[in-house]
Length: 289
Image 1: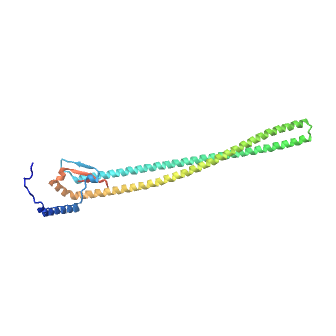
Image 2: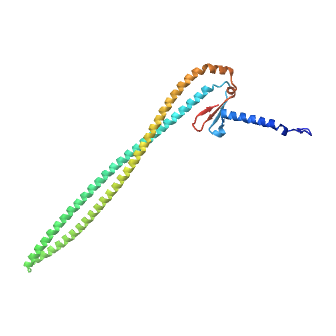
Image 3: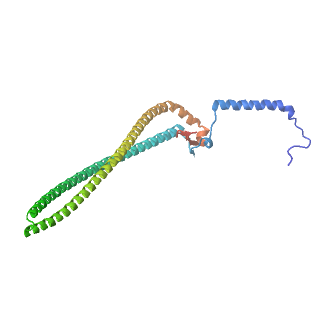
């Protein structure tokens, strides 16, 4: 297929000035349109969601936009309400955990106090037993000394010899019992003191850890309360803005009613053709083109 005949010559260089002028005019028009109207970025550049809807009859764009804005505000308020309820639930759970920790700490302190009292009671009993053993030892020593003196005065008396032997036997048994009792009492007293010291140490560590946990829970509860107050203020602001927008929309709808009726009689190509909805990813608003 031949587009140009053989020998056709076109003087491009001769018409270069006209081409320059035409290119300059197009560039100026494009720059003016860019300054006046700006860039109209599509969903490829802005992101978000694009929904295309078609209508059999003419679409009421202001009514559709109002319904979508109302639904968007409702969804935002629902999200705020759910977030507020979640924060309140977390706050209640933190408060319950803090109360349970305080109850456990009080029970632990009471238990440690009882153990300390029992240890002190055991120590007192051991001291009393040791005192009684010491008293018995002194009595046995005194009896042995008396018998020894009596035996020394009558060395030939047979009954004094038997008495001395009995005294020796009783003294040996008493000494054995005393030494064993004193040693056992000392061991029990040392064990009780060690248990008391360990229990006091454990109690101090648990009290310190419980106080730290209580401080952390209190700080978290304060943060949650502040967040809940901020959310409630935002919800109140949204409700006030909703009321203001509804009042302005009613006023604007009353003013635009004659104009909208004239536009419906004329009928625009965009309304007959369809409507494009796009979501702005920055603020979450819906754009209707």
